[in-house]
Image (cartoon, rainbow, N blue to C red; front, side, top):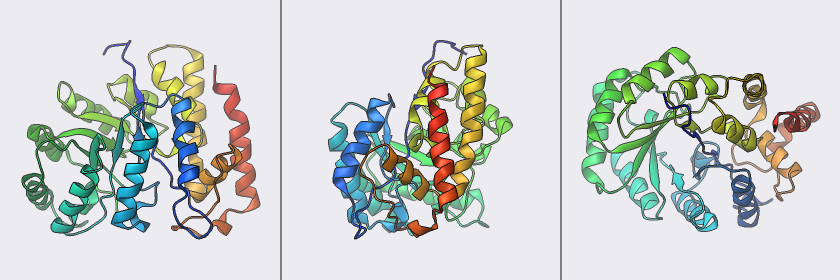
Length: 303
């Protein structure tokens, strides 16, 4: 393993909404700048954090285009917007997102087969998609937990690598043994692995993962940048940083994405707490204090 390898940080972007629940592009501009100022490697523009399941295809395309324009070539932009269940609709979505010019279109693993359906069904449906879209569309995969989490089997990962069509996997297995196996399987291939789980991040970087792509980039992306830039340092500072971000990540289970919007509001980005997924009033005063206290602690780990 190359100890000088620089790992990457890709925020899973949240979508700011106005009071009327239309997309707030002024706040989006501030958000893009906030991420880039903190040293992120790229932006995942439309994903579950973005409330993509509550956005129309037109809105997913417009949001992808807006992030691409706002980033102005400073960092690459990838996007999903892949929410339909039928192959024809999925192909339409993929082509529409690809036409925005994003660097890669990310497909959601749980939409290729039902929870009880075997890998053979998943593979056949993916083959239909691959044969129906241009070969120059860069593709990635995302083990999105909604509507159910479908982790890729070793057999499917082998097949995915063999197609040479996929360059990106957002891994949500949250298991170090699985992570080690996946790192071995993908070594030497074009498939880069990005961990979405904060608690296992340092361990995944040490076995060859390419970086972090997850929810917590909406709370303190600079800490993930520090860890990914210094993962090979055998120091107490790095271990302490991992311990903090792992523990802090339990806030994912609190009231996300509204709690992230509250933090971004505290950061002065002009966010409302409005969400199409949740009633923002569900973020109670105790939850707000927890977000505030976590934010206050962040400064101690910016060594």
